[in-house]
View 1 (cartoon, protein in one colour):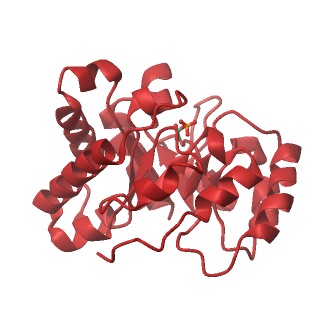
View 2: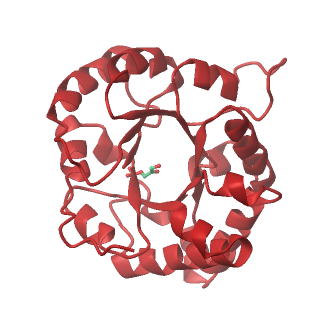
Length: 252
Ligand code: 13P
């Protein structure tokens, strides 16, 4: 379960969250946990997370190693700040900051080069869904993101399916809608890299996840976890999400 805090929380607020959240994580959880705060919160979060089972992630990186790129942050900087994960190609970055599939592909390579696990986001708009383009759009995004990556690198990725119409709207995809796209993503991976790799890549769902809907989403065969925005900002709410009811999870 990955928390994407977007542009919320100062370093002090991040500390306050973690001081409440960390002691309440039960042992023997059915999932791994990653928290992705804003860049300036990373040092405070890294200090509190060291020695805890929770991984630290950033929300973006620049694809270049270093240089005259005012305002940007490199993969090496994130790794040095204690990150193990980085969100890449979030729809907000694609829509608001002009990120293309090609740039997403370069960012994935930069992340992998620095030992970071990319959490690569894909997902369709409402009008693409309504015109039956969902699978086509997601296929283009997945193939574009992974272009020219060797299989060994693909197996290190995490993918996240986030239908744009479900982000921050309270309108979650139904388990059946999400499962259909997750299976399509799994099939694309299987076609290109074989079944071993396709089964090993974790595919997260994101879009209006809440404590009330996480368990039914997690029961879908191809949903391996969640990328949570709004509902990850309060410790109690994210705790209920990481404590989802896993009793009915089918082994794959
Ligand atoms: P919400 O959970 O707030 O819908 O956001 C989802 C998201 O964009 C996570 O990356």
